[in-house]
Image (cartoon, rainbow, N blue to C red):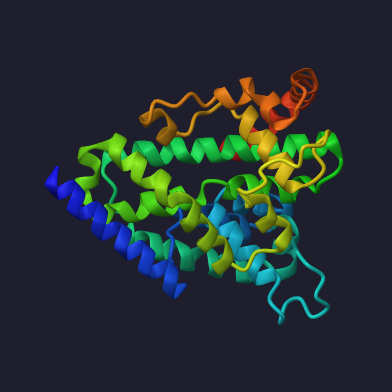
Length: 286
């Protein structure tokens, strides 16, 4: 236990220093990079197919949007807020280079144990579920761009992703996974905020992660933050860190009225969006 405490303290100090310096880095999945390369190399592939793969990886998606909003690629300052438009803006060559640059970083850092890989897999599935619900709800409501909502959903757990990836440098943390989950819960919000700011994402997406006002209080959901909040209630795949802490991920759905949401109206919305969610979930996981 002494080793756990020492490594948790060292990890926290390191993360705190990196946030202060604005130099957080984050690995991504190599298979996503390879899938993008194969699609980009195939004349039969469409831009939409390539963008669909890029959407499944939150950091690559964030960097693609950031690149598309760079002055050199966005001379008229028309803000890009979703991955599909970002891929069209930056082009396949830039996307492929970006994907491999991020993948190379992961290869240098990814030394997770089987325990950590299992948690990482569960966290990815949770993020995909949030993203699928976000897209389906946005399409049903017609108040928010569905691609923007899905991108925000994929970014919802990015702080936890970073902490999990970096935990490979502190092997004693897996000796007590519930305490590691407490550590991640403590740091996930500031780390996630720092990552989003480093990526210079549009305010439309940054506002969705303002924890001081998780739901606007009106019905139906009218912006990305509201859609993301409802998606987090609807998600059917538990966050593995919640499971480690013994938290019931369906509790928020039962307590929807506490946020000023009529449960009957919420159930009607979820029922109408469920089929679309299944389609998006299948597409993201395929």
